[in-house]
Length: 472
Image 1 (cartoon, rainbow, N blue to C red):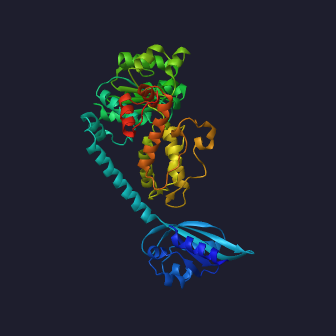
Image 2 (image 1 turned 90 degrees about the horizontal axis):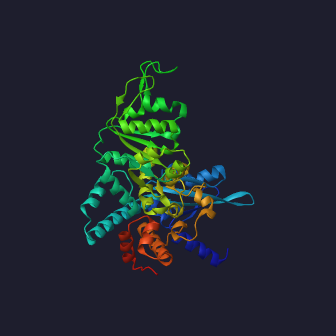
Image 3 (image 1 turned 30 degrees about the horizontal axis):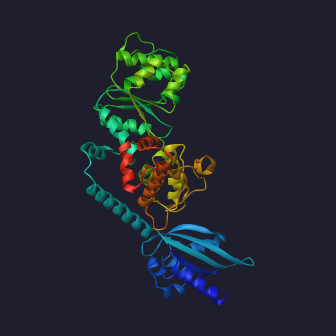
């Protein structure tokens, strides 16, 4: 090795953020990076005069990843707890010369510092948000009440906050609500929140997926039956799902899959406020709030004769359309944080996201919306061998099929984080670039508002914030 190459290697080792160990094939430490002293609690001189076998026996390396490479003769990655109590991710790679293991190069990344930085970043974000609230005009009482009442709903985008406000306003009434939107956008979550806001919150919330019940069992499941109503019926009979919703909320998901005969029976229940069990002759009064949801165009189903027009009008009292996740990317960070907290609690480990994952999370199209995002995160959580979650081999549907990504919108491409750019700055940059693009292609703030699914006043405020004007 030339003197130049030797100095280049020395500069890499001494200035890297990761902590390097260079170890001989028999386990003797040849060189280390300066930062390793603080992480492992042992001076550089002591480390250089030791072997990995001695350090593992002394509890400095728990366990030694180098010894794992010596045993398997293959690269390895594992979690270490150092003698100072710090948690690190360690990676090690063998170096062979003519088939002989000559060196093992390992590097470790201190997760303790990363976790502290993330906690500090979260605190700074909170303080910055509070500063913005103080510096801007005071929010009206309704907006403030919404913040206090959102519970577990992850709502940051303006369009979703407007939807939440609408639901909060109509919650005290018993008006039927029709929720529209693609599969996985969160219709069930919003239906549950509507129930919690309603005067029926102490009653049951009955969640029914109309597509999951076989047609031959639908009537008995929904309306219940009397003893002996049919072969195999329970001896004591059974109350149907409509009766079980008494005093509460009945949520019928995938209402478009409801068979025509059941549509007729449901319409009669809505009109009369009563039902008749299978095998019974007397009607029973029922009292529930009806919320339905579908990812289909019920209007087209009515035209095709697949859905009753009179039932459609009965259900379509308060229509609410939930936009897909790709149209409200501001909600992704909160959704990710909430999902990650649930996964950590469920599986009993505290995993954190590698910063490089955010470009995938924010840039993907998520055709399965929130459900796909949560499934992807769980898959990434489970497939990660360490406590730092990285992008798994199986990328989201949108990244597997880049041809499906519209090229005209900057918000739909996987834009990488800039060096030193925070997540808040990253989201602001995406918002600004999207508005700049729309201002060159759309004629007015009203057209931009319609395209983004938000109010015109929200568009005006955003354009003023970034100093952008409509080109035409």
